[in-house]
Amino acid sequence: MYLRLTADEIDDRVIEHAAMVIDTKKTVREISDETGWSKTTVDIDITTRLERLDKDLAEEVRVILDEHYKERGQRGQRGWKAAKAAQKKTV
Image (tube, rainbow, N blue to C red):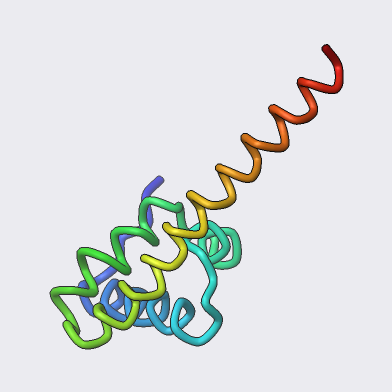
């Protein structure tokens, strides 16, 4: 069963998700977990749909998302280095 939302309800959700990103600096995954919407829905809301609704707000969100993407790469690199170090200890 699918939930049918009106265009206004979707727009309200988009603005709510954008506000959460700006106010709390939460990631897409954190917002998804908190709101119950899928990560895909949250991501589409704060990128594609938000751009259509409010370009200025979309730019603010984009800056924060870019920080998240950069941090994600750094976390991945740290994890890789830690795994390699642990692997050397066992060999």
